[in-house]
Image 1 (cartoon, rainbow, N blue to C red):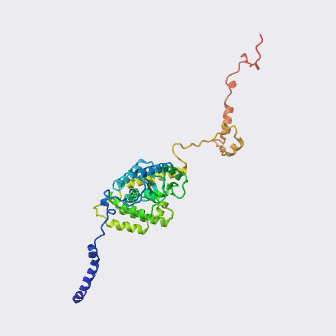
Image 2 (spheres, rainbow, N blue to C red):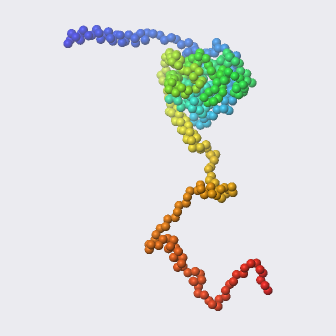
Image 3 (cartoon, one colour):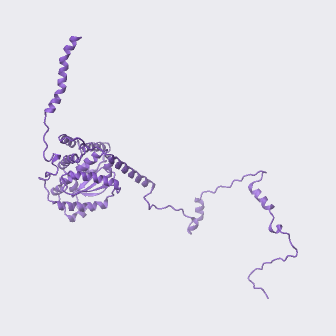
Length: 386
């Protein structure tokens, strides 16, 4: 027994060495250093648009975005609950302050179940209700919002427009009327948006992924929230095609994009803690679900609010044009009275008739006086003769 143990000892040492060798090798490997554009600690200290082609100034970009936003505001229906809108705005503004964006942001929540979010040039940001309902935690919402904020920070909208057809201020209203062909993107919310401002190239989407992960990290969120939401979109689109927005499907978050983001996040500086979820997100999502369910119930029952019309029944007597025979046919048949027998075998009607017969009349109650004058009534309007 002892000799057997001694013979097996070298084998055990060999197995332990083989298992630990990859760990030692991995510790000896150095990660690829982050460039300034990949390093979240360089946010605000770098120029991420240094080599981009752009014919628009920041002022003109903001003016175009403002005019497009005004057109969209006439088409869209927004969530007006102050608790929900304040929360989404606060999450987004926190990310904006930890980004490379040079314009202020206006954030609105669109009342549609479509899973989507998009930001126009100049910082006009629209978050769909369906996006909030699909997310499982706050880091996922933050990841998607950071991705869209990155598009504005990198000025992808006007960069794409600079490469394609230039759009003047006068042509923007025509775009929404269909006057300029070939540059429109219709989303699931049935709105028209200039294609050049939202249909980004594969390189622009990859850059927004990289910048968005950095902005999430800098804002204190787990940057893996963007990855988990992308994987959720993949599963939803596979299970039910057409679930996500057409704008997402233009360049879907495929496995290649996800792997690139994972590799970048693995090279980020380590942090002691990340925010994955908050109780406020859970409350806001529950509130949004309750508001949505209430509206669906009201839509089924026809209750559209305090101005709901009251149903009044028509009285046939008040309608001179009513057909009495038709009204009588529509009225439910009256219930026949039931005869109840009283003690003694007489019905109620017979008993009532007998009681009336037994009651004396007024003439029977008073004895007749033969000397009493009799009052005779005169007929007609003939005046008394003198």
